Length: 261
Image 1: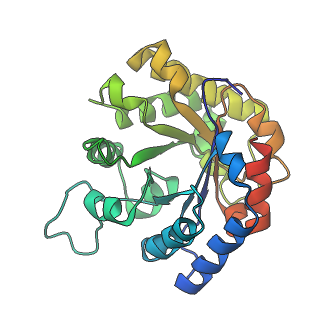
Image 2: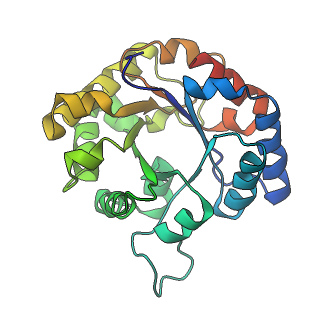
C-alpha cells in the first residue's frame, strides 16, 4: 500500500435491501466495527436511494464515521427530470460519496462517457459540502480478449475527467471493474488488476501530474471478497475495493475492511 493513500473499502449494495433490511445490515456492520479502524481505512456503503437516510441515521446514532454513498446521480440541480435525484438532494441526506458510471449503468441504462463526465462535474462543483465521485471504468470480455483493454480504460478515464481541474481531481476515486469479473465469480488475478490500476495511474499522471496521480485512490471492483481481498489489496496500485455481493453480508464486509488495515 502506498503510504500517502489511505485505502477505501466501499460496499455497493446495488438494487438490494428494503428499508428494514438496510437498517439491519447497517446495524450489524456498526455492531462489529472497531472505531479505530477508521484511522487506517476509509469505509463507505452505497445503498439504494430509499435506504440512504435510514442507513446514515444508524451510523450517525452510533457515532461511527462510515460514509454513506449514492449509486448514481443526475447532473442538473433540479427541474423537470422525473425519477432523477440531484446532487443537492444527496448533500441534504449526508452523502459523502457517489458512484458514477458503474458498468451496470452503462450496460443497462445506456450511460455514455459524456454522461459520466457531466455527473463528475456536478459532484465536484460545490466543495464546501463535498460528495466525492467514485468513477467506474472497465472493459468487457471481448475487449479483454482483443488485448486492447489498457487503451480502452485509458480512454474512459480521460473522458470521465475531461475539463476537471487538478485541484479537485484529487478528491475523486477511480474504481477499475473489469465487466467480465462482476458477479461472475471470475476475479482478475492480482497481476491483471494491478496492471490496469497502474495504467490508470499513468493516465492520471499524464492528465494532472504525478503528485496528483499519486494522491488519487484507485480501487478494484470485480468479485472482491474475503477470500481474495488480501492478495488484491497487497498490489501497489490497488488502494481499496468497490465490493458488490460480499458487501451484503456484514461478516464478509467486515473481513474485507480488516484486510485493508
